[in-house]
Structures are given as structure tokens and as C-alpha cells.
Image (cartoon, rainbow, N blue to C red; front, side, top):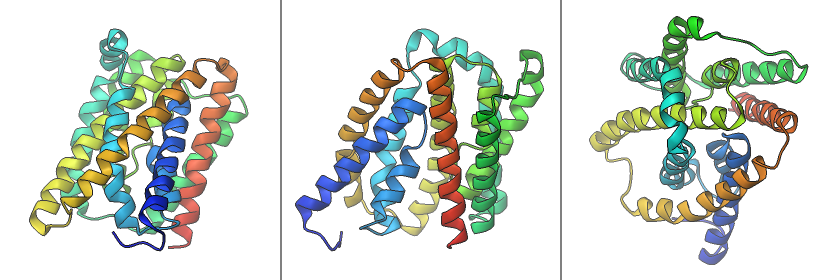
Length: 256
């Protein structure tokens, strides 16, 4: 990798970024890719930042699917959505092929901001288990299409999961399951493309693995903090996190 700072400072800064991103993900359940990509881009290329992201992102999403005791009850409630995610992501990759452009990220960013601000007023969407039987697959397919277009897993998955009325820790677990599904399916599509084009250097794997420790460490700390937050404080942190994610997406897209 080529960069304007020496190797020690480079890796120390990258470690600090993944520690912070892990803490944020531990508290609100999302944001590791957004935070890490935004901060790493201050001194490295997007391609370098993305190469470091792969292992920590997948590992922390899998970590977030725990604990094992509640995994199956949560999965049963969102199982049909996950089938939709797989279908939507693969169909989107085959149909659309490449990201649709800055307009898609900008629109998604604005949608997240509006939803978060609406949620901060105290109002919430509600989806019953009966409605979830047909809404879940549609939300999953929509999320898959959005993932194929933008690489973002949060829309409309996160608002839908919150509307199901999960308790705090179950919501975090449900997001972990959904994000893991999206990551794996998207990675399969990317792996096929990169295998054909030779776009992912093997040397990048070592750096990505090295960033796993600070990401997991940060997530452990963030989880510890989350369990000490009141339900209302967690809800506010969660919605503010969504708003900041949306703002970052919209600003980045507007400047593209």
C-alpha cells in the first residue's frame, strides 16, 4: 500500500478507527462499514479502505447474531425476510450489474434521515406477525436490490426490523442476522466478479485480518455500554445513528 504516513502511524490510525467503529456497532448494532470507510478515506484510497473492511465486517456481523439461545426464535420471525434478501441481492446483481450511481445513495440517505427524525418524535411503525408473513419477503427483496445497487444493507431492513417490536438485544441480533445474510450473498457475487477480473489482491487479506482484533474489541466494549443504557437512551442513540448514517450517505453522494 502506498500512503503519505509511515507504516507505524498508518496501522496505529487504522487500529484506532476500527476500535471506534466496533464500539459504535456494539452500541447501536450498525455503522462499522460507514464509520471505518469515512475515516480511513482521510489518508488512504477507497480501494485500500474496502480491502481492510471485508474480514472485520463479516466477523462482527456474525458475532452480532448471538447469543445462541435466542438465535432460532429471532430467525423464525425474520426467516422469510432473509429468503427475500438472498433473492433480491442475486437478482439485483444479475439485473443491474453495477451500482446505479450517486442518486441511489443520496435517496437512501435522505430516507434514513427522514425515518430517524420521525422516530425521534416518538412515533414508530408497527408490523404484526400476521403482516410479517407477506411484508417480510417484500422487505427482504427490496433490501437485496438496494444492497446490489449501493452496497448498503440498512434500507429498508432496519426500519422493518424495528417495526416488528423486538426488544433491544433482540433487535441487535436480528440486524446481525440480516446483515450477515446480505454480506455473504453480496460477497459471493463480488467474489465471482473479482475472480474473473483479478481485482482483489491476496496481500490485502493479511491487513483485513489484522483489523479484526480492534473491531471485535470495540464491539465488546460497545456491547458492555449498550447493556448499561436505558431503553429510551438506546432508542435515541439508535435513531441518531441512523440519521448520521443517512447524512453521511447523502453528503457523500451529493459530492460525487
